[in-house]
Every structure is written in C-alpha cells, then in structure tokens.
Length: 325
Image (cartoon, rainbow, N blue to C red; front, side, top):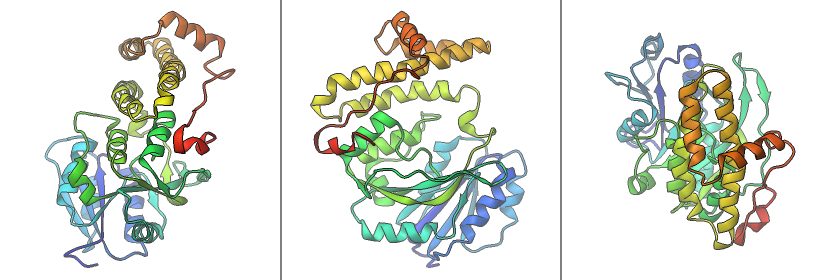
C-alpha cells in the first residue's frame, strides 16, 4: 500500500458487532487489491468488539474510537474526515467482502471517471454465512444518469439498499457534503439522492459482497421502520421535484396509494402488538399523505395489503425504456 495516498479508504463503523466482526475484518484484509487503507472506528461498543479490533496487527489498519455512542452517520462522517483515499469504501460489521471486491471496484472507477458513487450487487447470507439468495439481475445500466436515478429511487427506494456495497468519491463529498446527522435511519438514502442530483452513479452487476440477514440488525430494531418512514417523506418530496413534468400527477398518486397502504399495514401491526407509540407515529405519517385514512384503510383491506392490486412504477422521458425495471 502507498501509505501516503491510498486509492481507496475502507471505513468500518463498529458498535456491538463481535459476533461477525472478525469475519468482516478478515474479508477486507484478504482483498487481492493492495492500495487501500482500513479505518475501523469503534462507536463505543460495550461487547468484545474493541478487543477484537485491538487483536489485529496490520499496517493497513487505522483504529479510532468514540468516547460515547454517536450513531452510524456521525461515526461515518468522522471516519471520512480521517480518510486519505480518493474513494471512500463504506463497510459493515456483519458482512463479507469477496476477495475480488476492491479490485473490481477500482477497475470500474477507472473506466467510468464521471461517476460520483458506485454500488454493487450482493448475495444474501444467513447467520451461519450460508447463501440464501444469489444477487438478482437488474436492467440497471453501468452508468445511471441523474434522471434515471431519481425515478428508480422514487419508485423503489434507496438505490443501493444499504451502505456495505457503496463506494463514494471523496472530491464529490467535499462538494455535496457528508451524511445528515439529524437522521437516524435514512441518512444513507438521503445521501444517495443528494449526490445523484449532480453526478451519475455506477452499478456493478456482479455480486462482490455477501450481505448478512439476521435478527440483530439495526434496521430490524423496534421502531426503526417507523422512524424510517417518517424520515423518508422529506426524501421522496425531493425526488418528486426532480421527476419529469409528465409524472407529476402519477407520482403523487403512487406515493399515496402504494406507500400509504404499507404504512397503514405497519400501523396495524404495531397496534396488534400493543406498540401504541409507534402505531401513533405511523398514523401521523399516514395523515401527511393528504388522503382520507378511511379510504386508505378500505384500499388496504380490499386489496389484501396490495396483493390483489397495486400501482406500478411508470418511467418517463429518456428513462421510459426502464418501465419494467
């Protein structure tokens, strides 16, 4: 590694991740690509994560720690501030990089110099590391224009799905800013939207990581979905403002009658589990959709939570070819 100027900085925020942390760290250190640094940032873990981090004696690793738990996005921003690389490779304590991951991403970056962010396809693994779903094949092009990115994310949500398959161009972050620290769940989604407004995104269709699905994930914690749907309203509003004029009426309809029943379903589940606080928060989000809760409840009930009928994405302008995305 060129210690003065690594091409890629891999940054790993850690909080109580001892169960899978060693596998995660080892998968980075076993990369075939040599020119990277590895920043591991302990976000005040209270389990054995700190001891695992300290057990490594590798010159590529730089260790940092928070004196108190700051959360994901504040920790990511601190790590980015310390990074020396031209590109920032986000990483996760639960997942595994395939040995060719950084090499493939580095090659892609050099072939597509205009992109401000890249993300790759992922295989899904279980608690034991066994593959439970291979990466699906999408019609997404290698270079996703800002216009297409806006439509994909409005209709399908966060384009990368998580942080573990994302690499960001440092100079672009200097321009558009870092992660919003007032968001608890959707700060990554908001970043992708903000960045894609000015720069095309790159997509590697080959699976380069193994993404772990398990019950202890932060995204599955109680109240996380309620928080995310509240934070997402600002993001979807920003995306709607970027859509072609011919989608103006349909996008409003889609947001109300596709996402609304999903939010209503979540509210009902919270009520049935006697989680009244999150049920109330979900109901408040529903009310912001400017649609009668009675009509929304009727639609949810008689479509059996959209199993019988649901609105489909509709692409427009130069992106109309992706209507079947």
